[in-house]
Length: 508
Image (cartoon, rainbow, N blue to C red; front, side, top):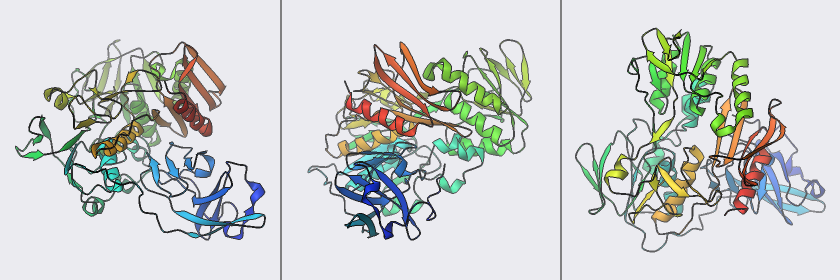
């Protein structure tokens, strides 16, 4: 996604705009020279920051002011209007702040301010050595925030991946579709890790946690001591127990290497079969249709995504993909794959020179299980993300935490959740007492249609629709016993932000 925030949009804020242009919590985007800037009114104050979110350049002035912060309408990042700090993922970089002045009946933006130093101090008694196991969203967000907080101790990040941490959502969306260049993918360049003294070790498999000795044993036989440890091993794609899964044209999609391999195969392929109507599977289907491939989707579901989004949204998603030429084979499964065909359990078969398996993922729990950590369909953590072993925290796809919004213990495989948990874990690794109470959020992209989802509803007894799903302008509320557990939306960005805020304020 991108947003045109050039200096041709909006008024010249250096020339001033009428105070009466603003309601009490209003925003106005404009420019100062070549810079896109926005003014936000907070009570009687006028605060100015850069107008574009540092995540995917979403238009902040179209978002929501909450206290003295602004939330991005696209993917719910949050920035301080006073310091510019990115206070909530998925944005990790700050925006610039600008000085303002009220003269007569106008407010003027004057000049860009020098970034303020962090006001957060590292608690006394912080550990000397922190080890993070995992190089995904949670692990990176924790390492980045630790250094942003001012933690100066030893910080090691162990990743089994061959590539530094990347923007994983892009691997099934714009990058796979060919509309995002590879240079957009790294969360930070190589210099970041050296500058921030983060010892990032790639291709570093961990085989054992010795919780008594406080050591991590690596696949190469070396051992690494720690004072505190974050377990963020993530999830791995489900590999189906069917003949042909190991053929060279059959791929799962999780890593940068996976996405590159699919792209390379797609350059010479004509027809792809996507196994599974999961979010990843259907995002891959949309991306490969964008590349011009014939796409077939086979799944046991009656409707795609019905379990998460309900029947009406499921029908919409199917129709959207069919409008773009995708052929569905629903209420069916694959019994075998060979070099030229995919065979269905129903007896039919389809030619395919590329197969993408999007049948879901499973949390990687082996290390935690062998270390004796409490397990309940995930690694059990408390409100501070600490496991049953003091000094060991868990975040991301493996963590099952007490969710204050649903009142249940939940686990979620969402990029933004993993990032926000990593950020909370960072504070607690150094002795803080920060509860993880963020409302789960994810977004999914299908062609030009974004679906935002806040909350967590494993089941519901009432589903209400405001607007038109078919018209791509709606808010869908998932309720149980009259209480809203989750909200899905299409092109209702501010409504999605408001739903998130309402859930925060209505926590159990």
